[in-house]
Image (cartoon, rainbow over all chains, first blue to last red; front, side, top):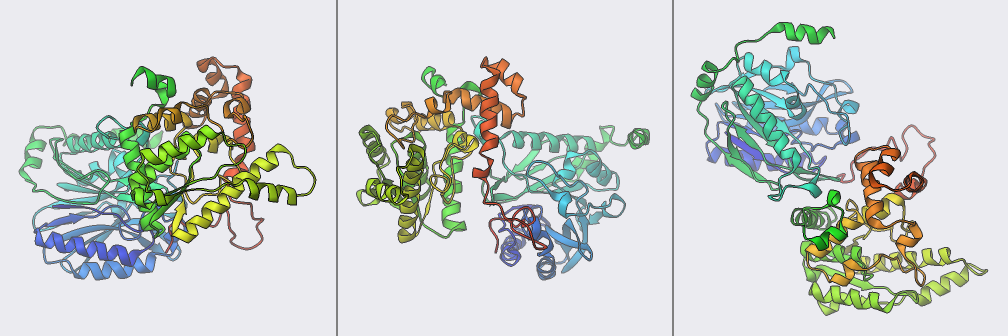
Length: 277
Length: 287
């Protein structure tokens, strides 16, 4: 698989689509079966009122990019999807075999601090957006950024049959003034802990693909990471720079991890308690 | 941290200077080159620590050859400030042709006298800051550069700057660093010791001292602001923690509130369906 850690220009879908096409060409050359771009990779993240104005450009770009995908290849990218007239979602498209195979939308829309997603986007519906896709190599699910800060989306996808979960992200840098001596930010170690915990609990590969570079007063830190079902970071992209990282995965690791864990022991009563609180 | 640095920056505000200076230089380069499509940084160099650090970051980001430094003294500028500014120019290896000294005295006096009756000290001080702004933007326009502002987080937060004067820059690369942190960075990147040790002063009138004007030293001010606004502490807890009078904390917080207008664009009274202000929410980089 390939982690396409790119920088996008806010609102410039056409330019960003060209960048996607370049990376997809590379993915073809490197024989990556699965390639993932970051959250809202086509239009950029901090769209504000532009969220309503990029819908058509996103649709045109998606159609054109999907045509470039080969038989068996799967490519995930982020875009703004029109849910109903005037309503938009923070979505991911799953492309392959020359077409758009499906979409999913973000469930948890952060609205605190710099984040204002609920102001613009309609949340995804777990009943329709929790989808497992297939390539001829594996079964996989797709979530978007904040969805990884809750236990359910990855757990549900894993139980629906996903062996790999792609997490498209736009995580901005914070606390740079207090970075560790090696330059690591608190948000990097927090993400790594989260990914490892999810991978260990749900016994899946998790590919976290983060944006990189500036966008208004934000700066995305990159650091895209592939974590194994055993909680090991198998591949890591550069911090603060665009990068293209490929890695091989062995699905036997999912099998082995699940034979030696309590992944199967789901207790619905916990969710009943939570629901009734 | 060395004991010397401990005197400059409180432990709770200390920086990872390597990471922060590399990050700020990177962002500055991206902003000037890619976002603005310019090549040069235009910086007003006062001999103080803020402008020295901004000059350092500009040289690191764009190269000394693309960093243009202007010394803009008035009659209230202490001669040693200009000596210190020149030491910074030398330390950063800024080419001779990129550095210019222009007195603002005549412009200031002409403008002050145009205002009619004798002007008070503050009005003249603000004229000086605004004359510098006009000159810097003029140089920027002539050279195809951006005016890189030198405001730090302490000054921006308490509104200790002249609106449309030193507040009138294209960007503020050290606007999220408290004064103590700027001093730490200056010390750790090898700027002249006199620059980061001196008592801060806008030098808008003779003998002006920022700390006596504000009634508080910068390390304490920074620790109050950090606790109140970065960590959301209440004022009583801050006073108790720092062992400063509650009235001091309240006064500083009041100053932050009172100067909010200086950090915002001028207000537009709404009449239409969609006006500039809270419902004009487009990103800065747009199109």
